[in-house]
Amino acid sequence: MRGILWGLVGVALVAGCASQSGRSAEYGGRVAITVTEKGFEPEVVTVTAGKPVTLVVTRTTAETCATELVMPAHGINQPLPLGQAVEITFTPDKTGELTYACAMDMYKGKVVVR
Image (cartoon, rainbow, N blue to C red; front, side, top):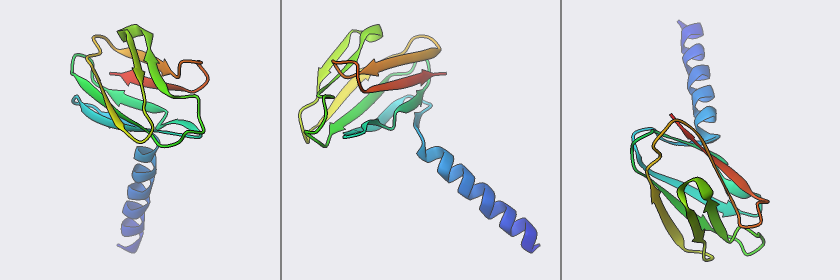
């Protein structure tokens, strides 16, 4: 019995760590992204094809060139004012990967569409 309990605890910990590496909006909805000195965090988010998604992007530092989010595949070029949450809504129409970056293409992120 004790072994089963520890096994369940281990599975819960692994699942919790895995969910921290990226954000998911599997059924459409909102995904929070923060711009830090390291870039876009999380760097990868997962969404569902055909469902509207809103990226809520907040730039928390002036020590970055990521002052806008550019996603050419959807014609997005959105300024990211310091300390303000910016909502970017679009509907991915097919599965695959959409990349986005700062205007200088130094900091990058990815939207995985399933």
